[in-house]
Amino acid sequence: MSSAGRALPDVGLVVAARQGDQRALDDVVAASLPLVYNIVGRALRGHADVDDVVQETLVRVIRYLPALNDPAAYRSWLVAITIRQVRDWEQRRRVALNRDAGLDAIHNVPDPASDFAGMTILRLGLTDQRREVAEATRWLDQDDQELLSLWWLEETGEIDRTEVADALGLSPGHVAVRIHRMKEQIQSARGVVRALRARPGCPNLRAVAAEWDGTPSPLWRKRLARHVRDCESCARLGANLLPIDRLLAGLPLLPLPAGLSAHFPSAVPQAASQAAGHHPPGLTAEHAAGQAPTGGVPTDAGGGQSLVDLAVNRPRGLVPSLAAGVVAAVLAITLAVVILPDDPAAPSWAAPPPPAPAPTVFASPSGAPSPSARPSSRAPAAPAVSSARKGVGVWNFGGASQALANSKAGWYYTWGTQHPGVSTPRGVTFVPMIRSAENVTAAELARAKGAGPDLLTFNEPDLPEQANMTVEQALELWPQLMATGSRLGSPAVAWGGPEPQGWLDRFMTGAQARGHRVDFITLHWFGADFATATAVNQLRQYLQAVYQRYRKPIWLTEFALIRFDGGGQQFPSQEQQAAFLTAATAMLGQLSYVQRYAWFGLPATDKDRSGLFSDGAEATLVGRAFQAAR
Image 1 (cartoon, rainbow, N blue to C red):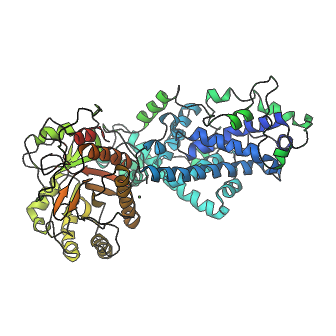
Image 2 (tube, rainbow, N blue to C red):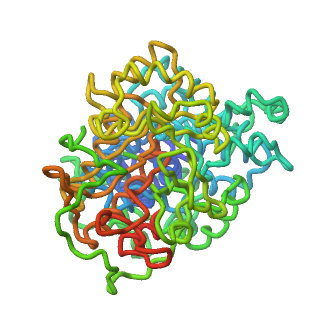
């Protein structure tokens, strides 16, 4: 491994800066910035806030450098401060997400131009197996990003293991265990990356990835890696993978954006060599107090702003936007290195709302009066978007097939194993359901097996008017469903999904005890509070609570705003329902464990006022919001 800290200032320069030499301080900050930028960029996964976190880190370096007791420990101190700022950002982001309830998805959206894997490939000119390692890091768990940012720098020789452990606040032994686990995940992802890029490629792998939305994720890494490991042809592709440490050793730091580089001293090493000639003045009162000087930040010799001045006095946004000049190239790389289906991607967030009875699907009592479902002329004409995640519940009505095609849903279901009167549009998937115990017959199971790889099961077994099944009855019939070989969703309870000793909890406990396979959790949710932010937050909390209890992917197969009161139904206005749909689907796109969702439902009638289409061609305001959702 190359010697660590290749670009950082020497001890003499740190001492001079610590004692108040203004030019030395500027040189120290300039020399530190590439390391800070690389740690933050990779830890934040190219989020648009990378520039602000880098700036905040530099401000703290400037403010607290006079209090550094051991100048020789400057690099470890710098790395620890950077990681602290990354953690502070993550905490602020979580608070903001909880506050906004998914209404402002920008909090969690990476900047496409700042994708660190893509930028590493592009700007370091990585090829072959080095490129594959960079691509493989996209498939890691979000919790591993902080560790990844430090481990990458350790492998490339910028920092050492002790500094990694100190920054994370862990023992070297604990760090070694975490790094070993992460490297195994990267190695597994390398095999997936190579298999996906192979041409003509494995047809069985394409079948496994048929429903993948093209976004690398831990869930799909595990799923695709399982195939790669068990498939003879795919496994052969990974036979000559070189060790990761050999591939990364000696790689330089990712260069800074050109706009930012213009603020650096032209030769940091020269500044470092001049450190011995500095004659630092005494510490100011502000330095003694551990604060940035207030009586004027140092300027460079020419009277212009120094990097210290830029960091301390400029508004948030010191680091220029990375979009200019690289976004097209990064997006081109992203498209070239993974197999992208036609549908766009979405990737995280999750104490249940007060239990509310869910609706009966086939026998809906008459609802209370509500505003007309006629589309509003004020609605903006948002473009329709196709997505494999986006689905809808369908029952037959005039124009159903055309409405389904116009909705841009990627999948649909009919609460049965067939779809009479409904034609499946090209590129859309029909998902069968075994709705109740009476449907567990040889003929229905055969139809379900032939309809596709996924199977929805028992619809609201906890309600008398729906499947109306006991937990024991469902467990006894489950082996017949497993025999289809389909990926099985859990029974879809009407409410109380995460409740201890609730219907779903008792079923999942019994299934585990009997060795029954359940591949994903199926949920229904209907909101009685028509305020958008409140409803979205309640839905998010419900999903999170279910995921935390069972740790399985989730399909949300019925959801909308409907208030059930005394056997009747109350609906919000079209504007309220459309606002909820837009905000809720944006929030769902940030939940990595929500694989699919389906709106309730496609037809809009006097009884079904949450519907999307009043006929095959006329979308309601809610329908237009659905068309634009991902």
